[in-house]
Length: 161
Image (spheres, rainbow, N blue to C red):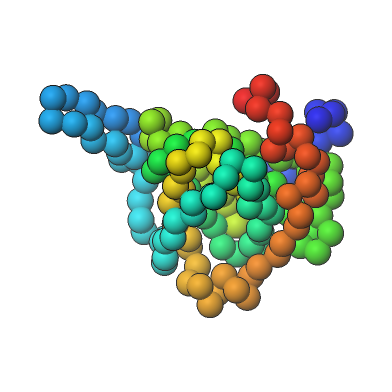
């Protein structure tokens, strides 16, 4: 991907970010946590499990809805890109990419105004998502783009992460 061509959102626009968590392990087992996360804005949650690592669920955008994601099994490549236009966003917009790993608890925050997508990196996988919108609100705030809209390398080039 040519980094020079990428446009980032204006400074006043929120960008995707990670809320770090941790794990505590002793003879009884393991406790995973993300203590810096608040459920205050959450209206619903759901899980995603991809049948294979070849499947890319992308890109799905919302003007008003924000999402929070955590891998609860396996690893995922997550991508989020700002929608400067809901119908025909610029292909030059910067795609933020993250690896979400169940063994390293952290929650990815995807602000409203972004399109997002996910690809499982492991055969066994489960992603838990929290939404700031009800299902009815989400259906009225739904914009879809093909997985390769911002380039195939978004999903294939893991070396730069």
